Amino acid sequence: MNRIAPAIALAALAAALPAHGQVYKCTVGGTTTYSAQPCGASAQALDVRPASGAGRKAPAAEPAAPASTPAGPSVASRGMTQRADDAARRRILDDDIWRKQRAIDAMHDEHSTRQAQLRAKKTRANNNLAGATWEQSISDEMQAVAAEYDMKLRKATKELDELKMQRSQIP
Image (cartoon, rainbow, N blue to C red; front, top):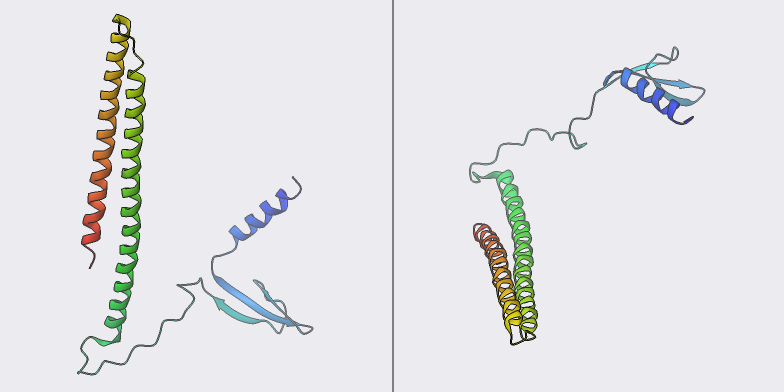
């Protein structure tokens, strides 16, 4: 609890200070300090503004491109950036397509395994009325499993086709 009070006080102080404004640079006894208040006769006023970008200054205006190169260097660099972006999107979509295909293959395997288990269970039915009833319920379960996996596989195949279509649209 003792650590929370100073943290709250510091946060309140920081909130009370302006987001940008006057800062003073002072040199006292060979040590340079910065303060929101003038700290003596040697205080130098600095105007501090919030950061405006990625930390780089905007380049000076580019000289006009010669008439022989209408595109200029910025178009070429944009073209390289676009090609790199397209290559990255292709790799991502290729990975997504691969994963979706593996998921579809796994669903096929899982469906086959469940159907085989139900067929094996069906062979254990007795040759009487109770066995016939049990066999019918297993057949109904097999149809439900087939319908479930059919729905899942149709959805996954549709998603795979959409991924392939997106991939084909990237140059």
